[in-house]
Structures are given as structure tokens and as C-alpha cells.
Amino acid sequence: MKTKILLLAICILAFSTAEFAQSVKITSKKTTYKRKIAADMEHKKSFTINYPVIGGANGKKIEAILSYEKTFDFKISEQIKDEYWLDSCDYKVNFNKNNILDVELFMEGSGAYPSVSTKYLIVNTKSGTRVKPSDVFVNQSGLASMIKKAQAAEMKKEGDRIKKDEPDFDPAEYFNNAKYTSENLWSFTVSDKGITFHYDYGFPHVALALQPDGNYFYKWSELKPFIKKDGLFGVFVK
Image (cartoon, rainbow, N blue to C red):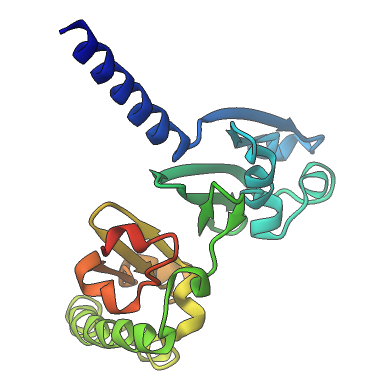
């Protein structure tokens, strides 16, 4: 009996260790930066950045990928001295297992109007590299074509809604330029159930409330023909 219990304990420990190795430890480091500004700009006196701190052997490599400055193409030094747009940067972890780290980065600022920018990054925690569409998808043009059909349906539905709710606003200018292609496959988020692909229509600030979500979810079973079987997502379609 004791031998069986010992073997069971060893198996549980081995399984737990394997599971732990497939995820990374993430903690937050919030830093507030002070600006020297005029008295009439007190609301711009500081800005805050919440950094994801990644544990493990590839922690520094992953942190470099999740750099706000690199992702959003700005410099903290310039925001402190010469520019006053930035208010905060933050992140959200959507998925962290199976050697997959899915993180959303947010940058919020204000000039004439407040605005928020969002970027989606998927990282292979085992190699410490950002996941490219070519790493995980096959037939990318076919996948993009499938999503494009969902986008067309969304534009038809949302176009009718907008015309009804705001007859003075014509979304055709933005919808006519909307075209989902394989280049847009970089923006997606992962879950145990499937993948959500994201598209930004680029509506102006005054019409953002009317902008369609641009989120297209597919179950793993639906995505199976497009998933690289020996890639990072192969585990979901076996």
C-alpha cells in the first residue's frame, strides 16, 4: 500500500512539474514617471506604466518582446521631457500554458480626445520568441478568406444598425476600405476553446461608439485545417 501511495505521489509531482514548466510566472511592476510641466497642465504631471515581469530562463527575452516602447513605437524619455500625450500603459494576460503566453498591451493617452491603443502578442515561452502566423498556421490565405467572409457579414449587419441609429453617419468610407488579409493574422488571442481574430476598422474618435467589434471567434475544431500540426497550437487539434 505504501509503495502504491509513493508511486502516486511521484506521478502527481511529475505531472505538476510538467504543467508548471509549460507556463511562466508573471508579476507586475508599476512605475510612475514624473514630468516637469506648466501649472495649467497639472493633469499631465505624471504617467504610469505597469510592466509585466517574467520569471524563468527566457524571462528577459519575453519582457523585451512585451516592451511598450517597442510595440507602440514611443520613447519614455520623450514622454517625460517633450511630449505629454501618454497617461498609462498596462497589460492583460489571456492565456499562459502549453508554452503559450498570450498578452494584450494597452496604451492610453489624451490630447484633444482620450484614446486607447491595443496590441496582441503571442509568445512561445519555451523558445522566448514571438509567435508569427507562419509558425502556427498553414494556408494563411485560406484562413484570411474565411475570416473575410465573417467580416463582410459583420459589416452588413452593423451597417444596417448604424444607418438606423445614426442616419447622419455613413460608415461606407471605413467599410469600403476594410479588407481582412493574411497581414491581419498577427492580431489574435488564444483560449482553450479556440482563437479570436481582431480587426480595427479605424473609426474616428467621435464615432468610436458606432465601430463594430471586429472580433471573429473560431473553435479549434473549425480551425483544424489551418493549424500546423507540429506547431505550438497542434496540441489543440489532435
